[in-house]
Amino acid sequence: MSDTTDSSAPIATEAPPEAINASCRGPVLFLFFSAALWLVDAAGIGVLGSFKVHMPGFLADCPLFTYGRLQANAWVAFLFGFAGNAGLGITLWMLSRLRGMPLARPGFVVAGTILWNAGVTAAMVGISLGDQSGVAGLELPKYASRVLLIGQAFIAFSAILTYFSRRHKQLYPSTWYLIASLVAFPWIIGTAHWLLVEAPVRGAAQIPLGHWAATSLVQIWLGCIGLAAVIYFIPKIIQRELYSRQWTFLGFWMLLLLGGWVNLNSGAPLPVWQIKLSQLASGFFLLVVIAVSWNLRQTLKGVPLLSSEDLTLRFMGFALSAWIVAGLLTFCNVCPSWNAILQFTYANTAIRHLFAWGFFAMSMIGAVYYVAPRLIGPTLDWPCARIYHWIYRFIAVGVVIVVLAGVGMAYRHGLALQSTGIESEVLQSRALMPMRAAFLGEVLFLVGSLIFLGSMLCLLVRNCCGECSLMSLWRQCRSTKVEGGAK
Image (cartoon, rainbow, N blue to C red; front, side, top):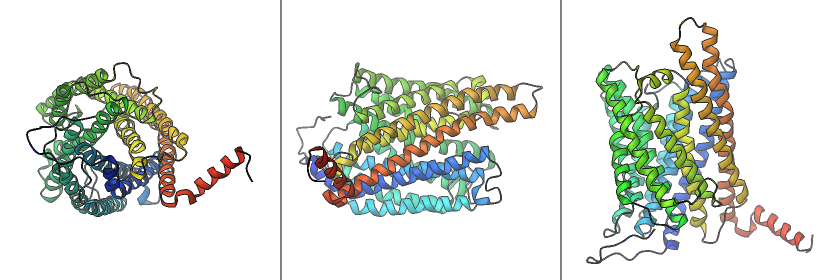
């Protein structure tokens, strides 16, 4: 992971990794722990919302727990609660390590994190009370958007100062993605907030604008952070150089150009040229998949990922696989008949879960597994490290179940919708089947997120209490008993 430098200009002295970790310790751990809390919140609310598919009468008299509000809250908790905190934490640590400089102005990060979490909380309270933007995938109330933008500005200020603290160093490709994510978030949220809330455009223009904002948040903002982690940790752990900067350059710019325009439904009430443009973008998105996957394949050259003994590599391998599958499903939208079959089914939600949980959550949890112990101490390991393997297993199995149910069973539902003479009871049963089958996957997401939160708590308690923690005392008692010491 070494970078070449320009010897003709003075270069700031690179800080040792211990100093960089010490500067990131408080702010980044705060972001990681907040992310773990929001991940449990997102998974729990998602399970509660899916449970109402089985039991529609459950809490039916309480408007706070309607299916629509629960699903919107679950997505906000994941997208802004978990993804925002985890992504910003990884961004700060990676920028500090890649630039070789301590984190600048960590106090701004703490203040920004408090504001960010306050904005997410305000958004969820507002949605529960019926205050939504009306844009699917971007249900933020206007006051929550303002608070999130201010909080992100505080954190981005620290990240930009860290970036410019060492000017004469060649940028590792992950830095491109991280800087793009810092710029993309205010650009997307600010544009959507102004054109959909403050000064709304005409009704016909709100549909493509809302689709662009919601899709850009996932494909560009989350995609840049997740790919930055994958491109950084895989070569670092296997101790190889990235195969080609040119392939990374192609994938990076194609993602920025195409990410916001893919996956527009062929039946949307829009001019035909807009739908055709989206299909063209979905077709060219295959270039992004090829550029990233081929580059990493050549970097690995036979090194296994999913069967690796290194847990971080396994997380990154599954994240990369999920991103490739999601990209191939995006490419399939170039075929109008495929899109027409799936556009009114559960398939879109299943593909979103594939990207969110299979790609982004797995890449962030794997990165946290690598980073968090190093923030606390160079020799510290995860407490109960074997339990952390179950996070990988539960979420991986959950993603497979959701995707198979969402795409396979939803395909039968889509074919039934296009057929004639099918009774309404049959249509209803085929519509509910994928959601009910995917319910098991969402339960596994909840179990995995609870283990992740428990692991973070154990790590923080062990750091705060040292050898006086209950876990350390229990280990000492076990080792003493094994060695034949006093009871």
